[in-house]
Length: 331
Picture 1 (cartoon, one colour):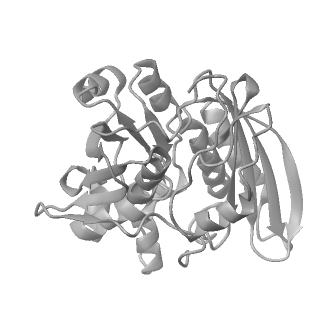
Picture 2 (cartoon, one colour):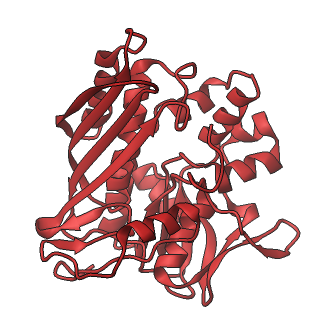
């Protein structure tokens, strides 16, 4: 992205994003201090500042029966900082606003300690926020700040490009599905949900090797987040079911088909999905030199939307994307 360009990014489909489009209203010119406005994982300001906010609400994004108070804070901060990774920016600081119910049911110091631990683990500091009482659920809102000379956006995908992901998918959603069915998830799945790690180093590594044309973090499921890249870039993305790297523990817990569904639609993996020129990535090199697992999961072509090539070779459009707060019920 040119350091002097200013633009908005097209939002993807879904009831939640329709509502956001109405909130934003007219396409008025962006302020001169804003290089990238609505539509990406974060806003970009003059000087390369990258700014995002992410809310975490009890019984919507988590349940207190599933996590310790410290884990709740850690996870909330990680979600916001993952948006910094999605822009290939370096984290600088976070601000956290916290509203807790009366009666001492929540240890607010432990929640805040989790936020601080998450931030400091990737080189950021807590620099402020707000504290309030809540008449109901525990609510956290984390603002994350980063810096990037050349932030990577969602709108750079072109026909014939390859689509790649880091790591393995589906573990966090598998943990939720087990909890919701009354079962305790195994340690690997619980860890994926409770202590996700923003892929800051991975994003910077890929940018250093000049491999990323479009980038997003996988917070709403691969189908939903690939859909954001497709919408922003005005292209079609076809994913290969056989190629999607699914966490083995998710397959063991749910079975192959349900684990694939968790990877496509479950979300909160906080891995990266990126698009680059065909044949540009040598996954063996990145595994050897950087300990980074990369998997090619699809291809970009002319058209629109996200499509899935099934294991039998048939291709169908994925009408269902990732989680939509205004389109479905949440845990």
